[in-house]
Image (cartoon, rainbow, N blue to C red):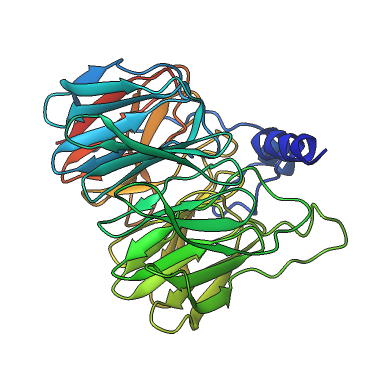
Length: 386
């Protein structure tokens, strides 16, 4: 029954969410429930394709749960069928490929010389980053829908049943477990935990952001990012599903049907909150926080105060993925495979290119002037901004 409810929620998020109030638009109210048509504009920056490869199969996304990662000039990526690859970020040349023959929904985690992915039945696989050889596999209590957090001392996996598990990086043995009581109804997605020194930061389906000690799983603090409101279980959904951003000892996090907030890393104290509704990762740049709302409105918020600086609603219901900052621009991709670049200053469109007609769901990676995009057909493409 719970799976059916979660499926209903996914369908309603994709096709039935109403837009928020449009800023500076002359559109009628009925336009807010329609997928926005692409607006014409003159490109202000040049987008050059550096390379493209189809080394993976179809990408099966659970709210962007299978995400690529870039480390030391190498891209590690995976697909839902269980293939994991390492690519040279400069050329796209394949370094290694490992076929696990296991359905994946969470990954890719990287750290301590390991690449870690996880599956729909709780299986966790650790591969050698250099060769792709499997070092160990373990199992947690439920499906994993987010990237594990990995460093030299611990591998942390968050399962969909509200548990965080710390595993030993050398053999996968369980070191500790932390769990919360999850609501009756939740979205089908999980926030990827973040490791910072010996602190683990994680968001949960009950609207809380919690910090633990990474080596023991002891709780340090908790912050009530979102407060459930309404009479029905649907109205009271406040899942924290997107990845938070940690900048200069401040954590920026957001929830569905709740708030986006700035939280002091050391104490968990709330610095500011702003009403918001998002299931995507946040991005940060130019001292601003960027968020894609549930209706695909893109917002920029001042990092030190929570003030909304600009809002672009011209991509309404286009099924955007998480935003990423690159060279003074904000990149988002949509369900039709278009990659949009917006100015971080005022949110205007500055460039657009089509990646793949099957769409882009996975979070993207930016490094300097290069953007790496994994599309839903299994291709990975590198673009450079000129």
